[in-house]
Length: 220
Ligand code: CA
Image (tube, rainbow, N blue to C red; front, side, top):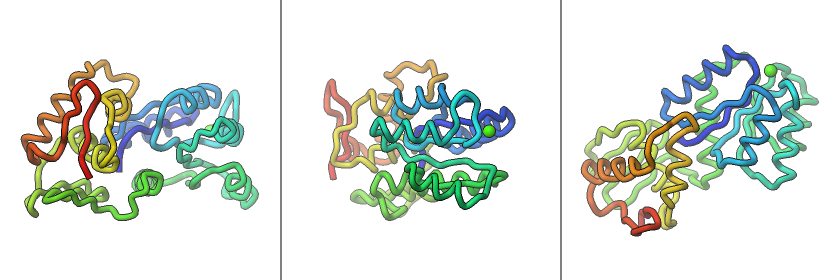
């Protein structure tokens, strides 16, 4: 699955590679290169997953995680640790980490863990979401209508998947905007309407309902 990810990592090469890979995979990515900045962003904004390095300047990853949980932020956290020590894992479990990745890691492994975490937190047990004649495979990121594959852009897919995961709920434009675009995106929020219109053209008019002045909903 996709959506909005915060990467807190102080090694510039790792940060750049991870952020680029996630963006190419269709995620919106915010970054922080120290613990204080990472904590501020994780508390202030809504992320689907936080990737959190352990050894960080200004505030280490454990302390960031502890503070995040103390503030009742339940955002899934994937710890990136260079130390494959048992005590680190025990500490992480106590502190409320959701998963670990030991450095150095493969980017494909990272993305698999991120997808699993998002799926788990969204309460979607199956990688396949079916709504009427529309089928969304969140693992392969393929969408089909009546069994025929539909070509969606990365952003269109992300928006459709986001609405589908939250089907039955009204999803506000602000929430969509937060999930679809990262902090460096200067795009206007009315682009959301363009994406919705494109999805309707490709997947079908009836799937997404507009609640005027409020947002969008896929009725369950
Ligand atoms: Ca580090």
